[in-house]
Amino acid sequence: GGGKELYDRLWGEMGVNVKGFMLQPVGPEALGWFPEPIASMDDFRKLRFRAPPGMVGAAYNEIGVAAVAMGGGDILPALEKGTIDAAEWCCPKPDSVFGFQKVLKHYYLQGLHQVVVNADLYVNGDVYEGLSAIEKKALEVAANASLSKSLSYRIYENGKALKDLTANHGVILEDTPADYFTEYMAAAKKLLKAAAEDNEFFAEVWQSQQDFADIVVPFWAGAQTSNAGLGKAHADTLE
Image (cartoon, rainbow, N blue to C red; front, top):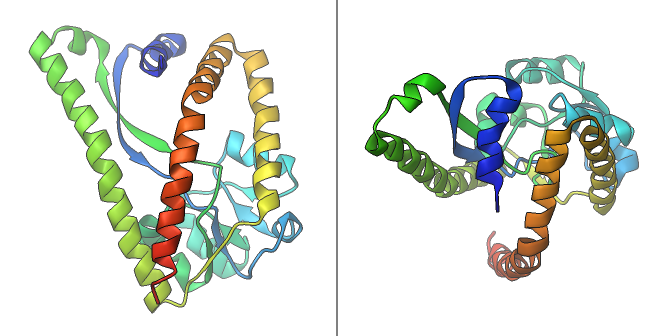
């Protein structure tokens, strides 16, 4: 869909001499951990919420959520001290390692703020150009293998962690309120439009993503609806 070419152009736009490879995707990330169930965005807006900085935090602020940015290691102490009321970090496995289940028991998986985050491998541009064609291809193949293998690995590890959280730590899995999706998407779109007006390359990337979505979403969303139905039917049989 043109994303790889735009990704390669990014480094020139930033003025850095590197060759980048995407690998090890993380996500979709959970909405987060809460002290009590939230029935609507009005409940959410009452809480001080740890969220990532940048556009994500700005989107939350846009819809009236008091978003607070802090590093991962600071989240649990902040929750214990009452500096923040609720928080997100990542997914069941990393979240359980940080110990959020010790202080918060209501966990919401469905979030929009970080559907996917990719790790990257950066190679000095001059070094990369000095590699043979076979060596360059080896890096490309390894990165692609990392992408595909990480997807299945993280699904399994997060599944095991979620099962442990709900079975052994009193964590209650909740459904995200419907108005979260409409409000967050509207706020994000507003911020994306503003960023596109300020940066020509950003606008080009965003347009490319929209063009790609126009092609793949009708198919993939329909297919995933069936998969989600099958998954729920199985989940309903579990204790």
